[in-house]
Image (cartoon, rainbow, N blue to C red; front, side):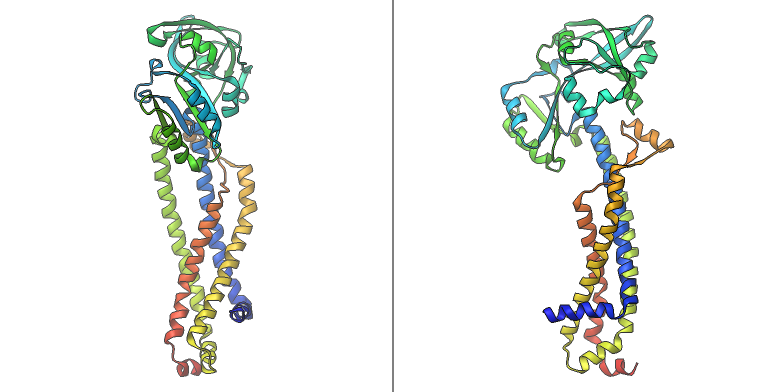
Length: 407
């Protein structure tokens, strides 16, 4: 076996031009496939990350029936079992409590419907970096009784930092919710719908406003390893009482985004398939040329005593060597470029950026460094190379020695 490996390695470098042409075709195939898939996967990860941070988390725990009827009356009180599960699950990186309700916001002659979100300032800021999105004023602390509003609300109600906003709505179990709050800060998110709708209070202030003391409408959960989402959700669901709680993953709660990603991913796979077909013909053409050039060489080797299956084995090793060299060189060149675009993502502008922002997604295209991208694309291109090498193997099994020697 060692001898075959040595012969195969020497053979591929006897004709450097031929080998380099084959290597170049495989190298280009790997480079294009990895780059295309990395940018696509990176964009999906950015879309999902934005969606889960600002809304549901990767997993959301709430009271049974809340998702179908999102009312503050379907809120819940946290208990020791839930707290223990969230703390002891190693895949949970952050659990963010929220109390959400709709109210009427008023200032002077202007009124507007607003979604109030009661938050833990430290945890919410760790999740969404709201403090970094404050354009006027300051982010509040856990003991603050002020309010943060979007710049769309501020413009409509003609308010600024230091002004007072009046909130009126219905609290827990029909209690009247009314209060006036000083504006601590005004924020701006990429999604104008959020700027026109959202306002933040601290959890304590929101619970007091809605007479929902110690209650939450949801617990949004972030994960260390999103690929283990199903397992984490299953473990939480088993540990909690199914009659009182619902544990839902983001795909169930955000079906629109799930369908958009699935549709775009299908289009990406079709484009990748077309690329693979082009690659396959290129590699096959190179190997066909190589076979035609080596017909006499094959005939001589069989004539002096080499078995045909030994010659086929030699070609297999040659194909493996060339394929591995092409794949590794493609990965090595692609990796630093993708690392750069992972740290410095491509920023989308114009109409495309507006489309992203309408869905609350930051208009960027980062590259993904998921190891599976490199592994799968490398394996697929290697398989294409191996399939293309079947032709010379079949040829060796059928060619006539005398006819080949005469050529």
